[in-house]
Length: 414
Image 1 (tube, one colour):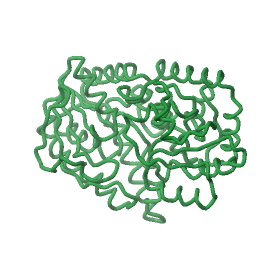
Image 2 (tube, helix red, strand yellow):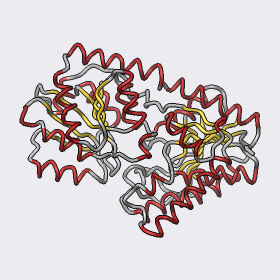
Image 3 (spheres, helix red, strand yellow):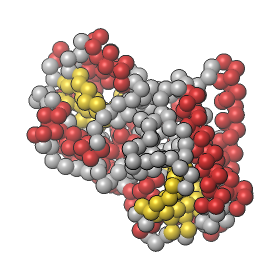
Image 4 (spheres, one colour):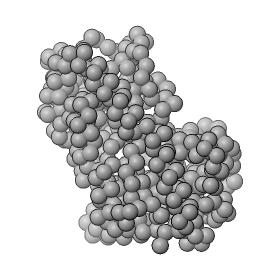
């Protein structure tokens, strides 16, 4: 097939799924064209060595990549974030008419939802079918954010976005969702059940895999022969970093638990202030580290911690940091709602507690301390087995390729 890939984010940005899909499809003999923006995520600044221009074309791993200009931003300003999303929607739509006019089908990495603008244009003008890979739920991703407008304006935005998403679901030839609960919600909101399939996300398998713990990685974590739990990833308003800090502070007096946070984001400053305010000497911030260093840090820690706010949107979400931890064979402590918590508990790969309950999270930290090294190692083995059997890249791309083939042969959606 001739396959178009539309994603606002693409390598070298740290969003690996669209690149993995494009590369795998090319390796399987398909002709792949990628339409994306100039790299600026997650800092919201254009990457060194790139200059925005209209015809930014290159060949990457056998795929023809066309980059279009956009407004770089990823801060806490709702207006600037909207301009970022809408600018890519506009430029990608203009470029898609010629760049993707000859493809048989389009794979859409759907986050944000405005990415569907270009595939919608192709659908309307050229009849090109689209398979969307839904990564988060709109309008909740907007309305649950502190950047969302309040009052009457907020309610109007909510209604408009709900209507827009119903339209997206109807226009898509098929829809891949990342959890069972997300499938139920999408169907409830108007998607044809026959067109919706659960395809669990996977980690960047070129990076995340089991490795041995090294003395260097233990030094980086400041390992003190205590149970070390590590948070790794974005520190945004939805990740609820403060609960991990409060939980660690609550058990500091035991002298048994250290919390290490690796990453950055708009919530990092408040989390650092909270740790100082609570006098949490067992909490350390390492800042952002290259992805290539993360498997060694995972191995040097005893558990990975994953937290999310208790919002309806996250009941249907399996956060990417969970896949990364499982790919590395790391047991986890999670304070999350819905499908992610059920996965951890059912697979026996760590400890779970309700979200936004730092006291319960503190209890799980102590429970982790009391787990024997042998039992912890067995959790790690189950974590890796769970990833390989349910979340691997090969399994995911197999399903997406089947969906793309079906869409290409079946023609555009009704």
